[in-house]
Image (cartoon, rainbow, N blue to C red):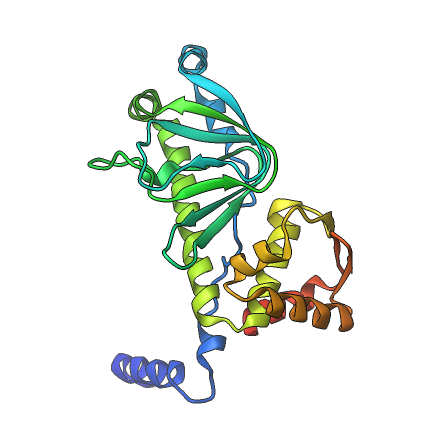
Length: 254
C-alpha cells in the first residue's frame, strides 16, 4: 500500500498532468451577472419597531431611464434598495467603464460601500429603464445590523454572494473567449434577470457589448452564430433560449 507521502505525490502529478487543460480544471460555478435570490427577505427578520424605524428614515424615489442613482466617489449617505426596474453597477474609467453586474428589482445595490473608514460610493449605479428605489439612512441601517444578529447574518450572506458574483464576472472577462462571455450574459438574463427562457431585452446591443467587454460588432456576430446554430431565437428585442445546455457548455469552455 502506498505511503501517505506517495499518495500526495500521485495526487499532485494527477492534478498537474498535461491531460487536463486549465479550463477543464478550474471552472467557477458562479459566473453569472447577478444573484438569483431577492434581498427583501432580509427585512422580514426585523421586528415591528425596527421596521418602523426603517420607514421613518427612508424615502422612495423614481428614476428615469439612463439616470444615475449613485455616483462613484460621492458621499454614501443611504443604502439603496431597488424596488422596481433594472440598473447597472460599474467602475468609471477614463476610456471605458467596467460593468461589474446588472441588478433587477428587490435587490440592495450598494452594501459594499459601507465599512469603517469609508463614506463614499465605490462605484456608480445607473438605470437601464425607468426604476424606483428606496433610500434608507445608512446610519440607521448600521444600527439595525449591530442590534439584530439575524438581520446582520442575512446582510453578510448578501455581501458574500455579491463578492462571488463579481469574482465570476472578472473570471469571465479575463479568461473566457468571446463566445463564452456572450453565452454567460444570455444565461444571466434568462436565469437571474427575467427568469424565463423567452424575454424582451431592455438592453441595447451596445449595453451587451459593455457587459461582455467586446465590441458591438463582435456581439452582433456571435448572436448571429448562436441563432444559426439554433441556440437562440432573436426577433427585434425578443430573445428565446432554445438550448440552455449547449449555452452552458459554451459558457464553461468558450
